[in-house]
Image (cartoon, rainbow, N blue to C red; front, side, top):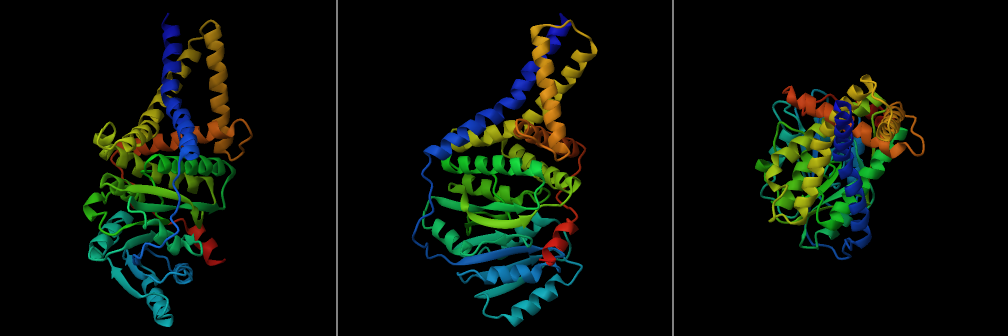
Length: 395
């Protein structure tokens, strides 16, 4: 009898863990199909201020400034430097003096010490609080497409749009990452069509000036981009991802580097969702509450449920229970999940196992992030992926 309860418990926890992914994937596909979210044709008439956070970007800062200068929309530039120990600032100053017509104006803010990107963004937001128009934040290691600023400007002619984010064209992807990217992008697009997405990417993110205050961001957590997107929606306007607003960046070239990046990102998203738990069932937030609630389920409850299911499954197998139809079904499911996870983890996904393995690896990263947080360790300060910087500098 105890063995049957182990089996039922395993099945129940597995259902709780995997159900939100199937439900949200189906919903997002429907929302994309039924949605009518399009970029307006007319310009908003608003000025654009580019916010560029940097830290030890000497290898790539000149290429980044050149990429921004090639845009067909003149803008103001604000560089916030997190106490770089290389010549990032001096290279920036020299480049800006050599190309004085590249921007309408520029300002370089120097932090006295490195506190993490979110603290840098908070300080920059305070510094540009008097500016009107649109704030466009972009990372030093991201290359934005031609015409990106003009397209962003057009989005804000819609008075309901408070933030818009770009879609990544990731290079150097490991095979398992391709499935993750596909799932992640379709999810963000679906949420945008339904109402708003709480998660946008800081590699290319724009919002209406004064829609976000520095107090909206929690400095000792990363995912500053998702914090901004969520704050915009909670302050009354929509935050959407544009599938045709593209930026290019490089992923870390090793599985270890990618996992480190994903765990760091996962911790930031989990903390964001926990801090906004009062909105999960808020009638005032309407459809956005549904999106927050499901993301909380996937990011917080699912990893714990699947871990519990795995523990019960291990206990069930160790008890050598008599073979029944239920036991046979559970054994097949366990084998499928284990093989899927292992194939994606070693970067050898195959058809039929790719999506399940991607979800399993994602749950692994979320669980690690939860454990790290539970131990009181914050990942908002991190070392750069030097392989990415070197690769970009050689292009």
